[in-house]
Length: 276
Image (tube, rainbow, N blue to C red):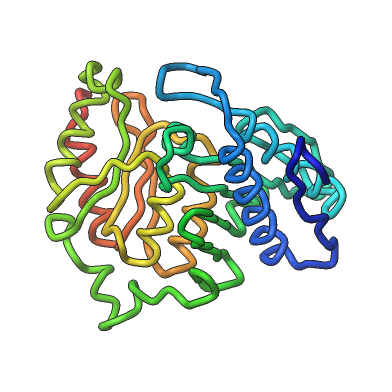
């Protein structure tokens, strides 16, 4: 396939789902990076920090084309508008560039991400951070890996990470400044944020979740995540032995990941900010 001056691989339909997901995010991420190096302009979506570039569209178009050829019976849902109704009961969920604001401003903290789900739950996730050459992969049928190396942070030392309280962990999160002006969102967020040992707000949920899975970050919480921001990392964290959860507080849905104890404590902290 050719997009502008940049070409990406035509993938083999005989790849298994994990191999296909890994190849798709790697190729999409590299395509986006090459396009950024050649120069990009952006369009604002909902705010000055919510932007889209030609690279987002090109990377999603590439993944869409490959999936329609390699998995013609599966559905497809993409952040930038891809929508295919499948017949298999399975759907691929695409985030061609997660962290577009970072991507556009020269940060390395962005990625391409993909998940495969059925009607019950997410089956697998793949996240590729091109400028750091990190590929996280895992799912229901395969333990989590980073660059093919097993992720064992939740299993080491008798699973200590699963029992570590949030007060001893660094928490990654994201909240747009406008949401901090809404007490219904700000109160639960503040309760959860102040329960952690330290905070990180780096601007790519899938990059964050990969780092929860490999132990660089202790836990993660964020509200109102669309499927493409949640499912790839959810699959990987769970495949690494970590915990995931969601909770409704003041009409907003919050998404949580980390060790079992940290997720339970984050959930309680968020609920403490309820006005009901």
